[in-house]
Length: 171
Image (cartoon, rainbow, N blue to C red):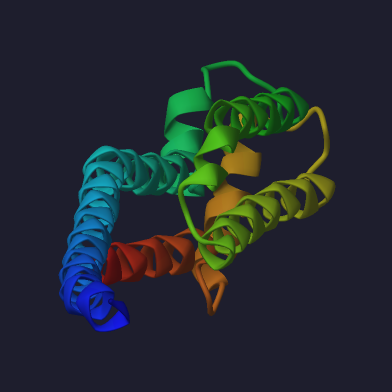
């Protein structure tokens, strides 16, 4: 009688074990497929956002570079002190508008952008100290552009090159 039970139980256990192993493999493969699909969808959504962030930060660097911002902000009849205030206000507004981009770029890229912005602000303030507040905005503009041209390392160009390098690594 015990032999009869074993004749039925052993094949049933083998069928159960084979079914269990097959089902476990199927579930594991399906889980991996779902993870891969989720990663693909995440990349599909996040990649355009990341690229847009890099684009916006490069545009920020271009917009706050002295040769660009001075042409945009300087108005006829401005005093040096007015130009300094306008330049710093414009940089602050551009910066605040792009703060959220730090979510999509590396910490190193964000630090490069932040340092470039801070160096441009320092440049403007240092040059402003070298001209009288009542001098014309042309005098301050000239001083800023001359000092900027003398820099060994251009902060905005350095940041732009770093951002471009990271984009190439992403793509």
